Amino acid sequence: MMGTQHKSVLSLSMGLALLLVTSSCSEEPGGGDRKVDVQSAASTRKAQTDDQGNEGAREAKTDPGHRGLNAHHREGDVVVTTNRGEDVLEGFQGEVHPVLHGQTRLEVSGEWNAIAAGDNLRGRIRPELYQSIKNLSLAQMSVTYDAANLSAFLPEKFESVGHTWTIDLQGAKAILKQFHPQPLVRLESFGRVIANNGGFATLRAISEDYYDIMFRLHAEFRLSKGVWYTPAYMLGHVVIDRKNGSVAYFQMENPVDLSRNSHSSLNGHVTVRLDKQTTYHDFLRTDPMQISGGDASLIDSVAWDESIPLDETAHALGNQFFRFLNIKWVPPHEVLAIAEAEKKPIFAIVLEGALDDQTC
Image 1: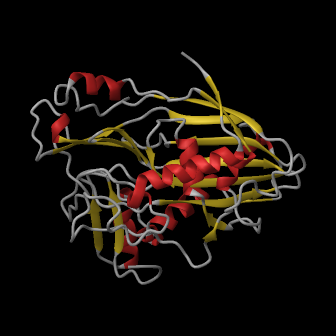
Image 2: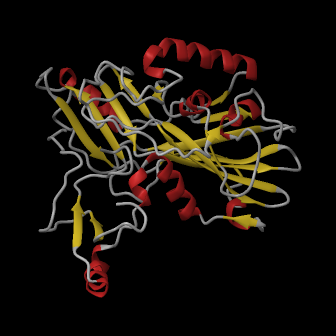
């Protein structure tokens, strides 16, 4: 069903329909400001190496089809693999990228409201645990990052607009710790399709003075034993000042254009009923969940010589994770007219949850 091979008009809806209903997941009931200066480049790299060793197979550098990465994955589980193209190479692997030849000391701050909507956890899990999720906030309200930290999002070398590469997951993990001390870049939570891990970045825009890099990262947070919090995905920008050799703007967020943009998984042992055989889930709205630092106006104010629209770049990054995004889906309110004009039947898929992010 790819490209021009469609034999029918495809419609994707989040509402109700009488044609074909496919559920991607089912929702069981319940289903002091401080500044921190990050370590030096050498210390940071050592800490990342130590973290990686502590995670063991769960944080393996190579991803053997996601099997064996955690004990919850069983024989026969459905595995979603990335749609990484052959032209997508590994990103920068060194300590400090040569493009960052100047002084980068970027203060990054933000906010995190863990439950803005979709709260089915109250009364179903232990009160103290409920409050810890309800009151989640950034682990570090303000962090100053240097060139070594932000090099994790850069390519081996800068090419043309649209050039895409993988990001350094261990480097990105160090920045995710600003949200919570236990980030995971290999997803492990119970009760979900085994998701595709990873992160990709694209050179979105070029001018004489700036580069704009846009990235997408899949990650989650282990809040405590048996409790995970999974954003839909983390989307962000790195704007580089080419003349000064520094990062002029950095931003990372869980997008808020989704009605539910987070997923919480809980083992039965943390619930009020203490049913160890049950896994509880909740589909939440996190608004906001973001960190940023530098001059945000650069995205719109720079006179870019070449650029790709923001929404087009976001879609292309999602395509690196999910092959089905190549399909040209038709909005429900347009499908009848198109089907009649093209003399094609309608194939409709109606979902309870999302296919193209980590909320389900």
